[in-house]
Length: 492
Image 1 (cartoon, rainbow, N blue to C red):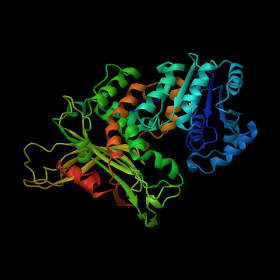
Image 2 (cartoon, rainbow, N blue to C red):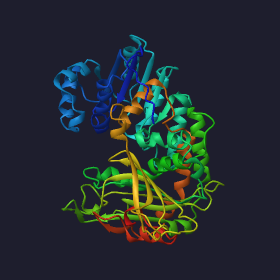
Image 3 (tube, one colour):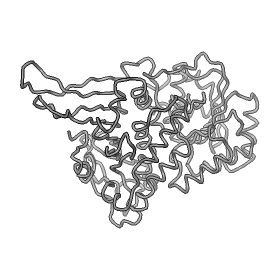
Image 4 (cartoon, rainbow, N blue to C red):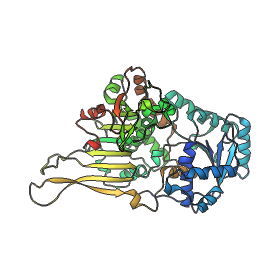
């Protein structure tokens, strides 16, 4: 369903500058994605990739270091010796102190050597450095119309900090030059949400309150915080997953048809959804939001520690590792339809999916036909769609209906064209396609919506509800949806 435009025949020069060039994000995600684009012939020819970091290294030293890191990525994304040699020819390295104007002047001179058609500044650094880097880039004159800056999450810690970052970015770059990345929007299944709704006549007439009873969005992780305990303890599940990933998925599901496929037309409709979300009051937070924290348990048959026993996590931490909440989109299409969002670490399975539960038939004439249809949009570990229906095994009146489903596996259906989320987003950043990036007003509205939850938790002396690692979270999350007569997907 996605029409992927390849870049192999385009003649354009580009420079991609990776600030934080030796960090985990760069070698775990960005470099493997860039290599896959290179392997697939989608990386425009004539490009340069410049890694920037504090450590002194030569180009050859950096290439050798990165080749060693590639051993740690998944086997399918590891290059052969010959492939890496060709890919490494694109790689360069510069030592920079991000607070020193002289280092930016030196970087500008390097970029000016050939005056590339496009320059992408990718900020794979700690968020507190975003204003520093953007201000310095602007002061050094590296903010011309051919320059784009990519900002990784988390973009701020709350609404005031997000506004501060956006203000500094806006002082150096136009809105269309600032690309706020949310890698979930690069997933093939998410890209196909718009195609599913607006490119087919089948679902759009049903995509409303009269036909849909509830929608569930689950972003579940089986892993714990690992060695990132000190970082995660400052963030928590609400900031890490709900404010960005989960809300972006909700907007893609709930938005009205945009007048065109233009980036701003799409983002305008997403913003309307965020503004239509039912606001939280202190009472609503207590009733419709569940926060949890994992304790010791068993995952895949192996004992794992609780959150408070993880490395660099304070023994008295109140940080949530699980959030489940109920909300509504208050407009004519969705009035009264509950949207359930759930995310957590150390849950029973590693998967992300959206479940659209349809209403049952108004007058059942077959035994078992009161069971409702549903559409399951799988985001990870597999990408695909499952449409769950009811069918009779045989003929005859009184035949019991049984559940069946139509399964579309994107990996099999589009095997030759499949690309990863970061690969897609990096190629879009180079090409200037903005559809899958988040606009500043979207981001700020998302923070504005979650702020009452953060404030309520800040004044609540009760710790997060405990749940055993390897389960689906606190029982209160199931009780929350049960009040509406609903159950989570895995409980059906």
